[in-house]
Figure 1 (cartoon, rainbow, N blue to C red):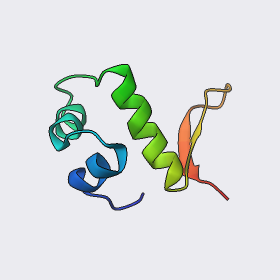
Figure 2 (cartoon, rainbow, N blue to C red):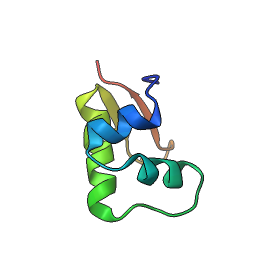
Figure 3 (cartoon, helix red, strand yellow):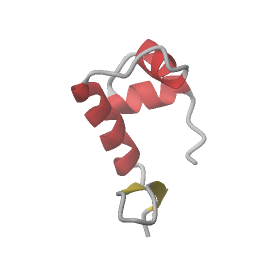
Figure 4 (tube, helix red, strand yellow):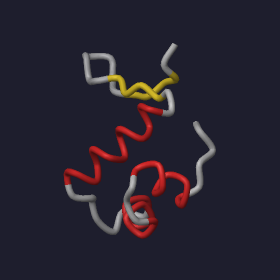
Length: 63
C-alpha cells in the first residue's frame, strides 16, 4: 500500500532488513517487540489495522 522496500520498512521500524525479509518469506515470525515496531511504523505512515469483528480483519488508509 505504501510502496516501501524492505530497507525502507526496516528503517521506519528500526529493525534489520533481514528481519523484514525473513518475515516476508515465512522463515520466522519476528519477536513481539519487532512486530510492535513494524505495526507502529505502518500506523505512523497512515495505515489502520482493522480488527476481527465478524467481518474479517484488514488494513486501510486512515482517513
